[in-house]
Image 1 (cartoon, rainbow, N blue to C red):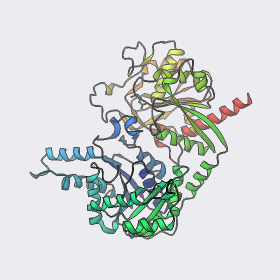
Image 2: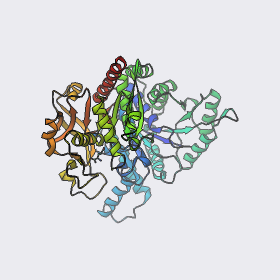
Image 3: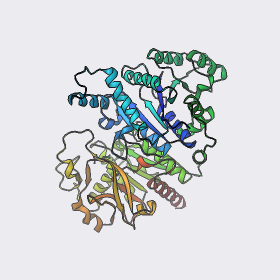
Image 4: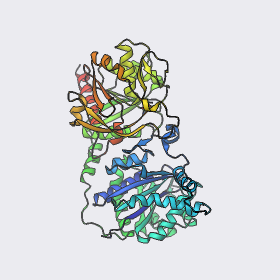
Length: 541
Ligand code: GLN
């Protein structure tokens, strides 16, 4: 095989939200199943340096990598599909590109030349793409370009694709994702939007090699031929992407359509004889044929947004499959949970998860939810702010500190059970300044958590400024809280459990980021198993 790195770009046209991230992740999965090493990168055309400062209404979940980069949620899909870590280098925005270029300009690195979009911005984009290729770790670098072609913002990115395609020849391929809508009134699939979208790319000098058509109805050969003819590609390069029951089916559908073999053909890469997708197929079969079902409440203030808790929802799918159980995630808005509504909202659940978050809106509802789970022996998982709420609830209702709070919300609380970390006190800038990325945690071997991980030293990803206040450790422990996980370097409480409860776990980190198809996260596997047990017990009672 040619040992040169192959660069695959994935662009989108006609409409946003067609699923470029899933197509990119699926292609990566297929190439990986054929024995290639692959990484995926997302280039985002917006001007924020990273999505860390965007609220979920703007941008859905912010995904955090091992190295503490706050990134686009598509990186979550990349990791869940490929089971390999991404990093800061895998998500680059226009803001970061300009920041780098301007920093170089200020240092005088451009030696007196006029700094321009072409070549300086495009060179910087190119550098960011090639950086991954140059690590020597990958056969393929798949680069997804956010937004749709034709947007003013994506112009420098498409221009970079044009240059790289020209320079790299057969070591580069462009996959373009479009929509082929079905017009009910005409009873027909329409190819015109795809034709226009490819024309837009051609105006910018890029001829896509493969056209992936998102559609609700199967494309017949006639339609494929038509698209091929109008868009200058082989009919085999017109790939149908039919709406799937689950995103995890997409790699299998793409295999049927030959997306990976087309990429290999275009990049002049020999097709390996074997392909191993057995585990993946087994996962999809189990996902579609669950043997049991549980209802787990997801308590948060953004539940009406589909993408706000993406990784949590996906981790429930992985944890469900590991238990051959369908997890029905019931979205519960934290602002609606009150003393007089809690029974109705939470009474029938087999498990309660209190979500991460920032700020005071809905926090009292979260605390009521924790209280309900604790007193009614309902399996509970609190993540980040959810864990902090568990500590506040315990302090208020068990330790009797009625005004206990986190100083994030009540600066003057007499009992700051959750308080700002020392090194956060002097920080002024908001972007990229939290406790971010992977930190070690030492587990208590008596704990539920240790039973699930079966490891004494774990590492998990963080994204927060506040922390369990060590002044309260003894009081909590005396009343039955197990400090199940401690960060050894800074002596921070990372996990709390309640000994007398069947399954009550609060974690300061985000386990959801590390759950993948190949390695469902132990805490989610354990939580779903506890929910199944709770349901069985309740049915018997
Ligand atoms: N707002 C809390 C903190 O900064 C929790 C953050 C989170 O849930 N990710 O500590």
